[in-house]
Image (cartoon, chains in turn orange, yellow):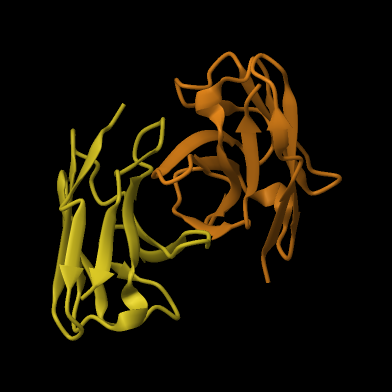
Length: 122
Length: 107
């Protein structure tokens, strides 16, 4: 079955960078777009970014645009989130997620990782 | 950006009661509206897709309806295991967005 395993979270100072990884298995990774969704402590879900199945296109929430970069390596079945200029308000659990449909991104998300906690604090 | 507004924010319900949660979109999204359930400490789980389509393995007491801008998630005969926060989500137009969530508590 589909498995998504995030890693790379931790405590980081404001203004610094961090890279999250998500290792995927159980499906043909290169056929699916991939998302990052985050959840601040005690708050709701916030969609962060998406990358198309072939890596040719990306899209970001306004709150992270210009600071975060999503990328993927289809040979390693892994998607990344490079986070720069981190702020306290970026503190959240970051989920890697995959949609149910191939190739396009306008499909409901049906698989989620367990999440990795990023804490931005001095 | 399409804003999704859920109501209510919180609902305290006795078992076997019916629960109705609404989600209103700031502009028409057709049927590209999905519902998720999230229990404390867990990742979200897809409950209903495309406004009203059921998901394999999800109990039949969960149903969805609506199109355009107004959507409803209904839980018939609430069970104690349904205590969770419920989110609507649109993927009609980038950026994707979620509603603020509705927490359902069991009395």
